[in-house]
Length: 330
Ligand code: NDP
Image (cartoon, rainbow, N blue to C red; front, top):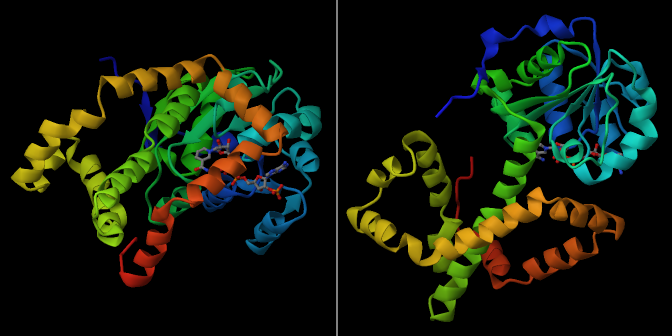
C-alpha cells in the first residue's frame, strides 16, 4: 500500500497566515471550536454571523462579530463553518461578492464543492481542512495539548501556496499535532457520508434491544448490556489502542469465540450489498440532491424521522438508566 503524505507540526509554517485576517463564518460546532483554537494559536480572526444567540456567544467569548458579508469583505481567509445545506445560498449572497484574487476559501467538508453546489472562482484558493472529529472534541483535545486528525485537500491553487495555507489552518486548529492526511474533496466527501450512513451503530443497537426485549428480557438490563454501561466506549478506545482483532484479547475467551464465530450472522455479504447501494447513492449525487431538497422542504422528512426515532421504547429506558445508574461518560 502506498502511504499518503501525512503532515505534522514540524512540517508546517504558521507564518503563512501572519498578517492575514481570518473570518470564521458560523459559530456552531466546528466554528466555535476552530475559532478558539486558531485564536489560541495566535491567529487574527473575526466571526461572521447573523445577530442571534450564536453571535452573542461569540461576543461573550471575546470575538468581534460582523454580518457574514462584511466579515468576508474584511478578511483574507474565509472559513465556511455553517451547515452544508445552507452554504450554497449564503455563499451566493454574502461570500461570492467578497471574493477576489489572493483570498482563500476554506471548507470543513468537501460536500458543496465536490457536488458542484458551490463553484468558487478559479482565482481564489479553495481548500479543505476537515477535522475527523466533532467540534466539541476539536476544542477539548486542543486544550489538552493534543489535536484531532484532519484531511486536507486543494481544489483551486490560484496563488501557488494554497496547500501551505490549508496546512497552516490545520496546524492552528491543532490537527497537525495528531497528523493531517493529504486527500481530495471527493475522497473526504464520499468516505465521510459513507461512514455516517453505513455504520449506523444506533440501528444495530435498536435491533439488538428489540430482539432481547421481545424475548422477555428486562429492558434496563438489555440497555445496560448493549451500551448503557459505557463498555461500548471502552471497547471503541481499545479498538484504537490495540486494533480490531488485538482488542479481542481484553474480552473473555467465551466472548472472543462468540464474536468471531457469530459476527457474520448479522453483518455479512447482504449488509455489504446494502453498503454498496449507500455508496452508489452518494457517488451519483442522489443523496446530496435529496438532502438539499429536504432543506428546501423545511426538513419535513428529517423532522418525521426524528419524531419516529424518539418513539422507540429504548428512549424511555435511556431516561430511566440515566436516573438509575451513575455512569462515567468522561
Ligand atoms: P452547525 O450546525 O454547528 O453551524 C451552526 C452555525 O451556522 C451557527 O453559527 C449558525 O448561526 C450558522 N447558520 C445556520 N444556518 C444559517 C443560515 N441559514 N445562514 C447563516 N448562518 C447559518 O455546523 P457544524 O459546525 O456542524 O458544521 C459546519 C461545517 O463543518 C460543515 O461543513 C460540516 O460538514 C463540517 N463538519 C462538521 C463536523 C461536526 O462534527 N459537526 C465535523 C467535521 C466537519 P445562525 O443560526 O445564527 O445563523
